[in-house]
Length: 156
Image (cartoon, rainbow, N blue to C red; front, side, top):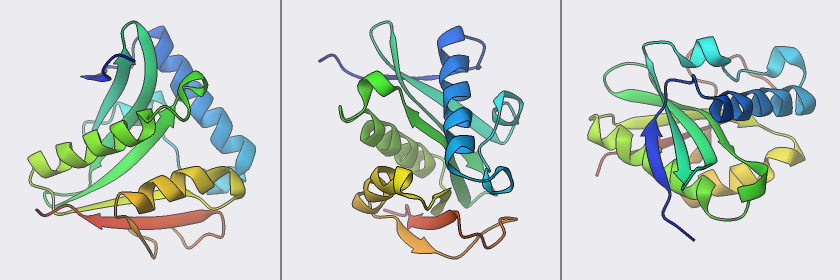
């Protein structure tokens, strides 16, 4: 299987927009609307957000974003693997790419919010396997039974 190539993505391509749409649809299918914090295309274009797509050849495999909360802290957003590439290591590769990018930017801590239902168990296991630990809400997030909050120190 060919190497996964990460590109900063301006969200204008059809494949990328389709996977973001699939991500949002999935979030709304598994959580009440008031508990969905996934960003849409406009939200992902915020200047504080850098969005990447991961490709194997001409195939979009994964997406993920890093939002700068301040000079020292970042938040992972919109991690998603294309259905046809689930179980191939693409999610782990994207996560490792985002962690490395946070380190290269001098961030000290990464945060994330993800779902708490059974559908999110693979993601929760992935995050935990890379060192993320559960924590309370951060930033403007409310306490929410449909959310799990996690953090990771990225200082080497």
